[in-house]
Picture 1 (tube, rainbow, N blue to C red):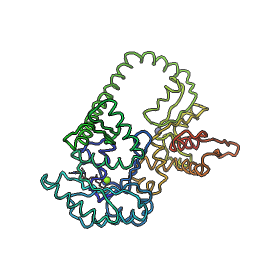
Picture 2: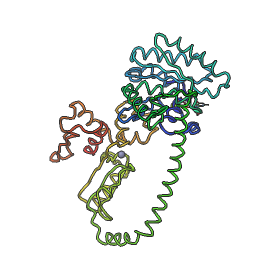
Picture 3: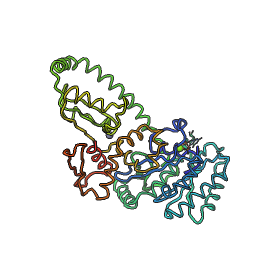
Picture 4: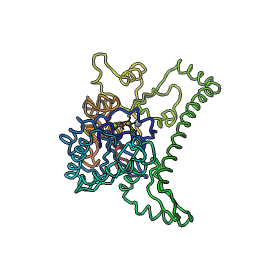
Length: 430
Ligand SMILES: Nc1nc2c(ncn2[C@@H]2O[C@H](COP(=O)(O)OP(=O)(O)OP(=O)(O)O)[C@@H](O)[C@H]2O)c(=O)[nH]1
Ligand SMILES: [Mg+2]
Ligand SMILES: [Zn+2]
């Protein structure tokens, strides 16, 4: 939370989405709330809500969305732009947030980030921060708040977020105990435990005194920068690999393939239309061991097939056209719809259960949300029916002709993540 332009999305993008500080200048204002799930320490999931701070949205959070925004909050992070000219208004919104938190999630921890400290003269920073901290503590009563000074241009951002994340880890004491044992066994001066994706410091064990109290954040910052520059090199390497791949194909395999193309051209006998997700992990010809001439492959976000009712008066999409090409013109009799686990499109569909997230305004700015809402909302509805029965009952599918019915059990052994169950429902609904 925090006023528009205070730097919320910037810090989120740096910590959780591999942005560098310079990239944040390109960010637009956040429209309403952006939800993201961050997987953490193996199986923890951090649900981050980045609430756009423009006044119309803020008013809306306190009025019509109050329950939705402030219920089940574990941590409220309020970001103040240290250079803000509207301090009174900032404080007013902050207090409204506290009030709503007190009503809906009284156990929530409160963090205040006095942000953009880089804009304050160095010799003034301590003083200004201390004044703000004092004001905020006083204004927060009866709730307690923890204040940090932050800037995206230095390591202070890591210190603040490490402390926030530390509060959220349920078994942190066990981790600390194991870390202590490990440090003793290897006889180290100091051991730090970083979270793999964000490089936030989760815990540490110190046996030798060290003078620099900011060393952890500095290490986080340096390693993250290093990781980012490695990933840049890796993008260049990937492009290089693709180009080399094309050259190798032309030199080594093309001749053999052309013979197969000619054979297929003279005797085409495709056996299936194969719908799957565009996800880079899906390589359908490899895992089906099919070859030139075997299948027509159609790929999109989430392996969806739009219902025929969407084909109105010449307006259509690629999927029905592909079905006509495969099944009518080429007489293919089999259609395969193949989903996969951890599908980003299905994860988003799951998040679209939230009405506000799926609102018209949000669909207007996101073609992916619009696509999912238009063509997967029936899957979502089926999924929600099944959720009620705890997935014990099968779903019944009935085509337009009453004779075509079938049942499907979704994850009967209860082995999959909830989003993967939705993905299975969606494949069946297609
Ligand atoms: N100097 C300085 N600029 C920052 C800092 N953090 C963010 N900014 C800049 O502030 C501008 C606004 O940042 P956003 O992250 O989009 O602001 P926001 O809080 O998400 O705003 P809304 O989405 O409208 O609520 C961007 O141009 C950032 O580059 C910081 O620590 N120091
Ligand atoms: Mg934003
Ligand atoms: Zn996918």
